[in-house]
Length: 249
Image (cartoon, rainbow, N blue to C red):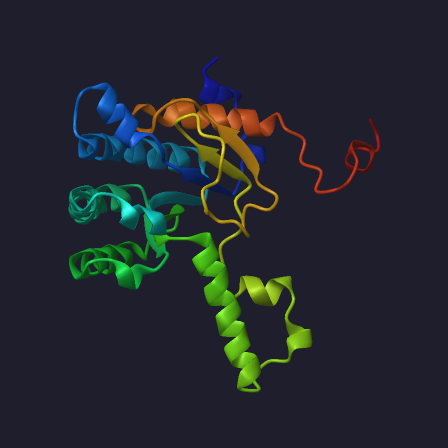
């Protein structure tokens, strides 16, 4: 029986978030420039997205470019921005074929105009799709996102539109860039690193974390299925006891 056949489709996570790590190391191991690893990682993105669609997972979020990544060598950043433009353009057809809606979060205004233009064009074109919402976290920082949300609430309080006592978790979440998207039940990180790197700090509060030593360019849908299968073996209690969840056992 294949791994895909062992997955219980009635117990799938609604939202999976991924930190795609290891492109640079993968390229270095092969004696190539780091950008070669980023280019090769595009195949992993395509295969993982198609795997998510095949399973029926409605939300997938990928950490594509962090706010901290702007501190990398200028040549690498430039290459990444050019790759982003070309990839989004080339993959639009694949997104349409798989019924995938593209979304983006982060400080998008900091992206080059060509990136923003291509991103908006593909978001608009794929907006009719409903099989899966693929969110790209671009120039993203969770601390930045939380700060922006707090600033938005503070401004409303200052202008008399909101009472401080009315601010609860739901109100705060409504100001996050992921408003309207369920929190990830599963977060996957490749490359063997054990940290979440300023990624969806609020949203990952109750997520199951899965770490794999595979570098991102080597990650394929079978690896994605393995993470889902591992997720289904875990007991998610949310502060309760096993006896409360399963009183008849």
